[in-house]
Image: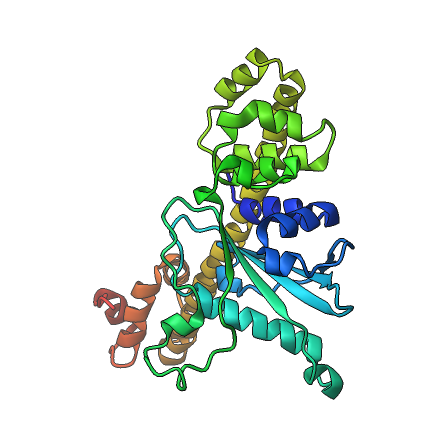
Length: 332
């Protein structure tokens, strides 16, 4: 099936773009020393992303603006690492993203640049391999002298979904269901997921779409399992999603095929155009040297391959007559 869009990014944003779920995520996954400073108001989602284009297929990010009990604001930057094996360059990437956030916030306003808000970086990982990335950018700098280890950020908060107990994923049932799905364990917890995601909700459909696109699942077996468990609505929804994805995949494949055809046609047209130009040049040179061309010679030139025309062009300069040009077909 064609890669219509990044399924990891789609589900990650679906889970945390809801202010209520985002607030529960922060309460569940921030250290108590930080969570205790958050005001009761749900976080605001800041539009836009900061992930490098080259990494967009393996990372997702979300920026939240939160109110603090002190009366000031802070940002929580959540970066989701979707690779099955963690990227050792992540602390460096994370630091660059944080700098971009501050630059966008401050702009050219002196007052803002003198009072940048705190950014709380949170890394969410659901890959299969153990997390072996340095805890901070400072740990990546090759010096034992702290006076030389200048860094833009001291570290980050890691939430390794794979390493956590199911109950610790979140007190929010919908969030927990989504995280279970990201852990590739949705099939083992179908009953919980069915009960946690109410019928008719967008997140219910998005979780099932993620399963169909990312999991190596037998569609008929999945539908049979849902039917046996009494999840008839889910079974019907799976069928609808599968049909939609198939049609989208066909459309994307057709679009890609048309683009490829246009590119190939353009290249083929260029070659044909160059061959035609060389044939016309050959005709003019032959007429200039030997007079009007016989009809059979014109036909022969029009049907010739480009390398044959090249050979005749080489021969026309020193051939004593028209017959000599075509008698010594030199390979190009």
